[in-house]
Image (cartoon, rainbow, N blue to C red; front, side, top):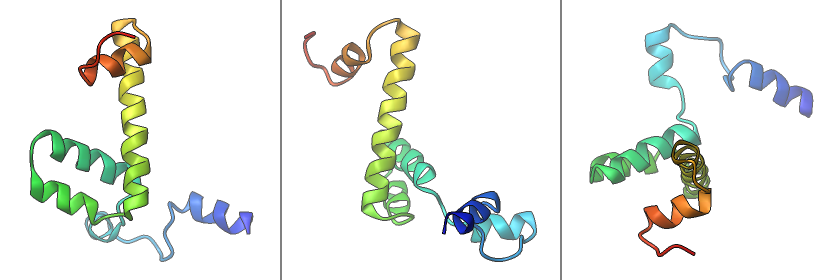
Length: 99
């Protein structure tokens, strides 16, 4: 079983032979991190069409996981940039008082 997963991983999850780049881009399924990035950016830009499109790329559970992962990475990056704790940055972003 793990051998199948490993082989598929090395092929990029493709189940068919590789297609030309232009065609492959159109046929390539969106991954959960791509969906999360587009979803969050669309939310920030108040782009309901973009939100709806990204939400249709993956399951709601996968999108939720991707958005959570994006939030964690963003808070960590901002914390490093500001030389603050992730907790302090998260509270600031949400407009909460310092703990």
